[in-house]
Image (cartoon, rainbow, N blue to C red):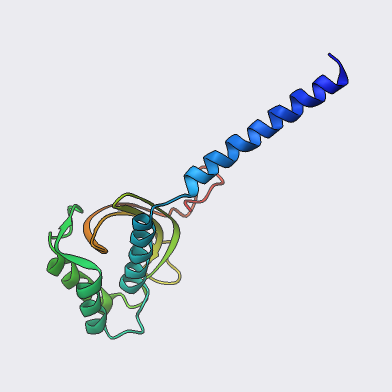
Length: 164
């Protein structure tokens, strides 16, 4: 093969690879307006729910009721009663009993009407905490349905990776 042909061949291959990577990244990074809106609203509600001890608990609960949870909210966690009022009652108690609880969002995703939020939840500043993934189905900008999974953060791990 002559040098010009090799240069053309490798140049064309590089160009096509760049186009393919760009197309994949564009597809991965594009979200519909609804997905963007749902994710933004879910993060706003999660911040209000988990990280606003500066607000009066009754104000937080009323805001969450009006802005964040659908009237017919469905709960899939087996240790939480179904319905918006049951959940907000649980959080009202938690605001009182665990004022130092904090949550930090590690990663998020949205697709259609679903939003995923990966979080590090700590009861106290010294607590190792839990890794939690919440999945919400959004309807009209509110949490309509919820699933979650979680596991404790161990003191030692069998690998050098973190849970976050």
